[in-house]
Image 1 (tube, rainbow, N blue to C red):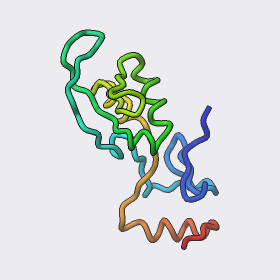
Image 2 (image 1 turned 45 degrees about the vertical axis):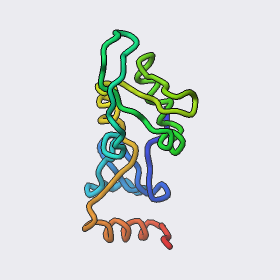
Image 3 (image 1 turned 90 degrees about the vertical axis):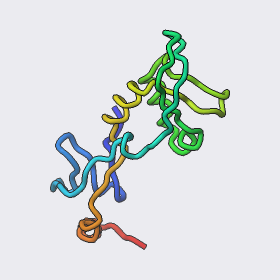
Length: 133
């Protein structure tokens, strides 16, 4: 099993009930960031090799695949044989839109907070030992 997501040097950790500070106290101002929120890939139409039908796909750019090595493996594992490699090994990967939407909306990849909460969140992190700048 993969370790839980964490941020700010491990001071914030995502638990089943939300984000918590290292001391166990909840941080309700922090919210999950899903792959659907973080990535805006082009939507294209391609021929689905399984059905021969023109199908909406999400085209995952090479830059994104290079920046996040886990993205490619995770998406391909989820999409299985329906993931298309376009343009050879350095090209894009296209995944049927309905598969991408199901995977990306449920895949937490980070966290976010309202800008108005940032100073308080960073102050809390400093009180637990974080050093910024």
